[in-house]
Length: 176
Image (cartoon, rainbow, N blue to C red):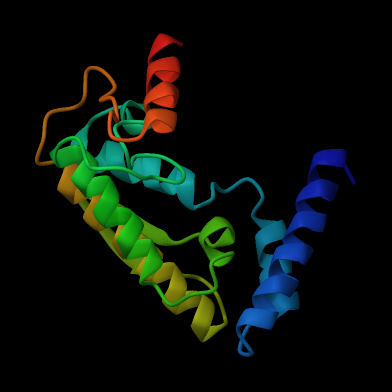
């Protein structure tokens, strides 16, 4: 077994065991084998990127570390409408009612019907909890992509002046 695949397997087992503690309906063996059999597939963060491209035509990296809430651990006051979309996306994830660890391992299925039209189609998990969470995760991402599609693609990073730590991160990421 290649080293990378072994590390994915170890992490998956740990994550799934944690999810079991959070949800009695979660079936560790079926989920871990499904995740391992699809290591070529992209996880939800990459799916979000593809959905953004489908819905907006923009490079999804334009939104990375944009403003106060487009990125990991947002805080401060939203700088504009795009940043408000990111804040809404954070709240959508927070309201899912799924074990938090699932946000990082579940893949969902969706279709780009035509440019500007993403549609969630559900999950491919045998477990009801996983399917429900996958669909909800997809809907959060779809609503985010739809929200940012109302605005022009960002040409530069917005700076989060209300949070100095995030402002430094914004500035440093715009230099690279």
